[in-house]
Length: 312
Image (cartoon, rainbow, N blue to C red; front, side):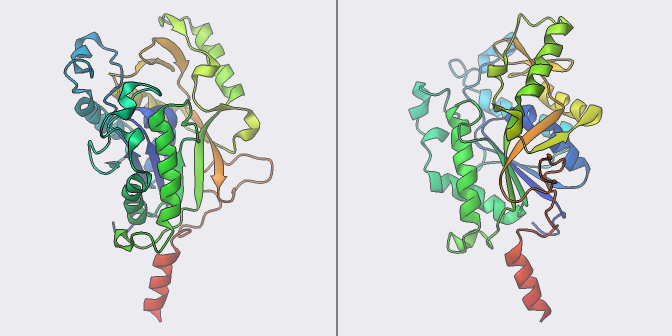
């Protein structure tokens, strides 16, 4: 990829819809501002439960065609967010959804959970060295809530970040690149509690209301180091992207439900924990920009060195 934009953001997610729920407002904001936003999705989400009754035949225990359908949903979601660079890890269908932890699908041939770590990371290294992101966003080491594919996506993303910077690792994949900042998705407890208070007061038609513990990545407020405010504009884009994932998500105003039909807040402000790199915020304050403190060419030492050599 040539003529890369000055700011480049890479997000690594397990299934279609994870990106919109966790980072939809962030993705829409940076894409609108001209940054290169690259999404890598690790599986097609073949094992997901289907919400609309008229699409129940797609389920893995029936036609087993949910994966291709969710690929189309993801394309529609990316259009809603204005994101034009989306890839599946290793190509569409390379890895299959592993199902919930302990399910028989965990051991199914081709399941992402059983993928060779360095092989899977190698596919991501190729993307990293191509788009040369300064910022990477992924899950924490528990994948937010313990799903095997989320845990694996975390491991692959962190491993790929190390390998992409190593000149000795598969030089045929491109020049080494160091990612300047790595963030994990987080939700501060105070924001989640406030969101559920709004949901309960709204009197919507969801049969029930989820709880704070049902939201992935809830942590004490002090753990959160960055908050990206989407506002009405990017919050609306996020809601549209989530509606595009209709097999998995039902959206009603500023709230949504998954297949359990328990309402959750739809957050227009998204939160992160910086786990590698230097914060661009003053001590004791949260960043309001994931690129804060990163020069436009940070992390691109190899390419910059080549350009300096040519200039001489």
